[in-house]
Length: 176
Image 1 (spheres, rainbow, N blue to C red):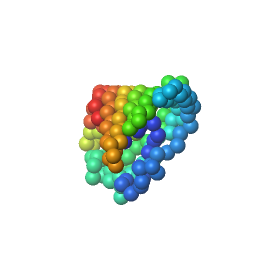
Image 2 (cartoon, rainbow, N blue to C red; image 1 turned 30 degrees about the vertical axis):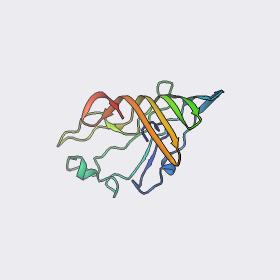
Image 3 (cartoon, one colour; image 1 turned 90 degrees about the vertical axis):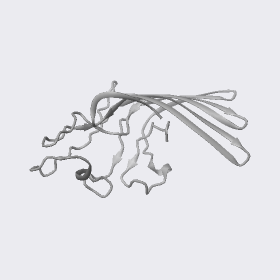
């Protein structure tokens, strides 16, 4: 799941769901073009659906043991809201796939909603938590599959930027 970032995920029951059933559908416009062994796909995703998460303070999301929360408030853990549907929040993706006799190679580019939420301010002990939100990330990636006899060799590489984490307000980069 290195370059598989288009669909939001159903994270309500971690580790207990088949990976094929984790993906949530989103409305998109997809155009495909085929030329010899090449397939080029371009996608525009206007639906800003975000991941479905486990209930905070539930079995699969133990908020209190992970994040220091201030006392005196009934439920200080903020809700996660999906971004509004607008031209600024439109998502895009591109894929170029080359089919070979004994495998394939794919190239990807995307600007989509991140599947991890972040706080808008860094959490501090004794202070109420800021809102939780998701932002867009940019990804360049490639995947390679090679069949050798009864073996399948797979490799994926992705460069992600504009990542947001809860411990920093700066946007980060990562190579997976």
